[in-house]
Amino acid sequence: MARVVLFLMPLMLFAGPVAAGDAERGELTVIDWCGGCHVIGTGQAPPGRPPAFSTILQIMSPASIEHYLSWERHEGMPALALEEDDLADIVAYFERLNAAGD
Image (cartoon, rainbow, N blue to C red):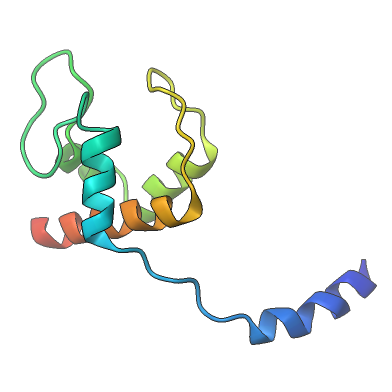
């Protein structure tokens, strides 16, 4: 184990920061993938529908949403096959939406 850490440490030191997502691409992605069920942006979902994104942001942070979309099973949702770039873009969109709601 110590050998692995010693081998990876220089790589971690020279690794650049993770690229930030693009909120505009994230918005297009959520419109395409999520808009059939969720209310995108601000607004309220009709009764019996999945929560609106503005409602989700009241109970989850963008980081929590990232974790949910990348690791959790999505009960009641279609299977998501998000690439890292897609996920970063979606998180950037939620961060922008969250900032607009403050």
